[in-house]
Image 1 (spheres, rainbow, N blue to C red):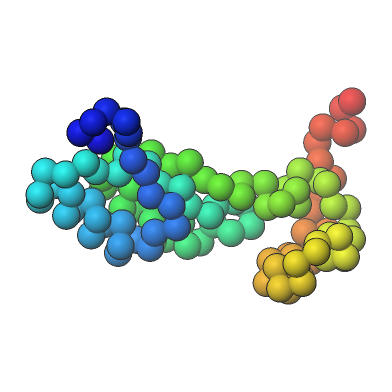
Image 2 (tube, rainbow, N blue to C red):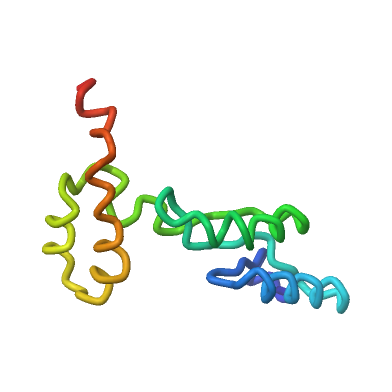
Amino acid sequence: MKQGKVRFIGASNYSAARLAEALETSRKHGLASYISLQPHYNLMERAAFETELLPVVEKYQIGVIPYYSLAGGFLTGKYILAEMAVKRVANVRYSQLVLTPSLQLRQLPRPFGPARG
């Protein structure tokens, strides 16, 4: 950062405790501090961010840029039936951990857009 090659830094996949510690350490020693956090966050997986990380980012006033916000297409209506999504995923472990528990998504209403053209 001193050479001007990096203007800002951000963190990704930090626990709340680790992020708070890093921010406190940078402030204590006058070092560059994170200005953003990139957490795994979407409509299906909100709890970890909202309960643990949100208080930290609010306290330290850092920005949030979530990744996986559309849950691999689930939240776009790309998959009508969760079973179709499970079959289309090449990574079986991912299918077991993320898609299979999400079978309740087929209970959600159809996306708003297609009905409106």
